[in-house]
Amino acid sequence: MNNEVYNFKLNIDWKLIHLINQIERFDANWTVIERKEGQSLKELKSIATVRSVGASNRIEGNKMSDEEVDVLLQKIDTTKLADRDSQEVVGYFEVLDLITECYESINLTESHIKSLHNGLMKYSVKDEWHKGNYKLHSNAVEASFPDGTRQIIFQTTEAGFSTEDAIRQLINWYNSETEVHPLIKVAAFVYDFLSVHPFQDGNGRLSRLISTLLLLKNGYKWIQYVSFEHEIENLKNEYYQVLRSCQAKRPNEDVTVWIKFFLSCLSNIQSQLKTKLHKSGLETRLSPKEKSIFTIIQNRPNIQSGEIAKKLAIPAPTVKRILSELLNMGLIEKQGSGRNVSYTIK
Image 1 (tube, rainbow, N blue to C red):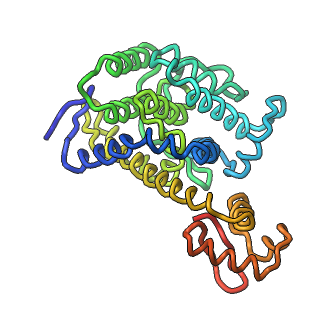
Image 2: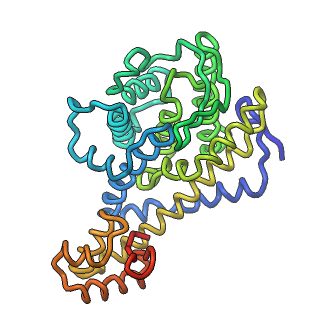
Image 3: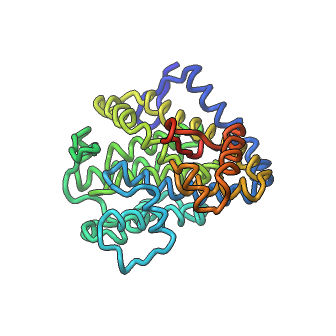
């Protein structure tokens, strides 16, 4: 069944309906889950925040690992953010934190979007000249690859009145549309925001922050406990391919593949959240020694049993027995073989 959403064509088929139903079923039970899993959710939010900040910046070429991001965010000193990677990470963290704490009072307006961009670029010395303002020069969507190369994906809306008009029309549509399902509205908004590319830089990162904002404002509160950005990072090539396949046919393009991709990502991270909540339930039943070993594996992925025994001053046979129990519970997994066996969180 062909339909129109904003300026786009959308084929509403059974797969799309299934994705929406799947997401909504989980959401319907969220209030009960939230009440039951209070303490576990605090820990999950902390982990998800680090992963989201790290992943969203790495998609755009940042080199910081989650471990480095975690160390930086543990003790932020804004006077010592000498390199751009650190500046971007702290800016993203502060905006994400603002969104999760104050989303109800952040409306979808031009001024708020510009303010979020300003916050995102707050510490980036290189971006001082354009933060919080629409682009002054034409830009293009580029993909960054691990070897440092960049590839142009799509030529975006021209700077000036064209960009201003496009963003105003998009915001007006989103705020006035009452019939389109919220999940499709969010996905369509993010798609067109990326296609217009209204700011000189930071559009990709801001689009992911806006995704979280709009999902929270539509009542999908579970989004803050799992990393949407990390899912996008894992599917980075597909992410760019889907965007490119739709954007190449502008205007009035068919965005069905993008909407399905966006919703599939949400469905995937819902499944991840269910698994994490199940594991956290098991964790509450661990003995003190089991908890200490599980915690050290959380903080030191790919650690070996000998290192665990040495760091925790627990006899090696005891460590091996507990590792076997944690493996059977499905809380950890084994990497390598023989003398090179190490352990990480599953």
